[in-house]
Amino acid sequence: MKWEVVKRQTKTGMYISTIKSFEFDKQSKGKVYGEALKYAEHKNKISFIKKYYYEVEFNWK
Image (cartoon, one colour):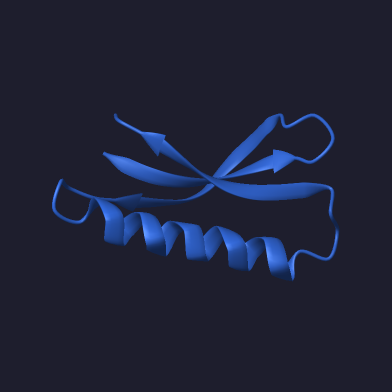
């Protein structure tokens, strides 16, 4: 299972691409989610062009 940081368009919310994946198991689920969220927030802060935003999504595959 993975947490994925995805890039989306600000206007439409349309999916653009997966930027980074964080794999986890049942014991590390919360810790890894925190890392993924921190990464997404950092990407949102350093983005000068507000055309895109980054968020964390769950991928069970």
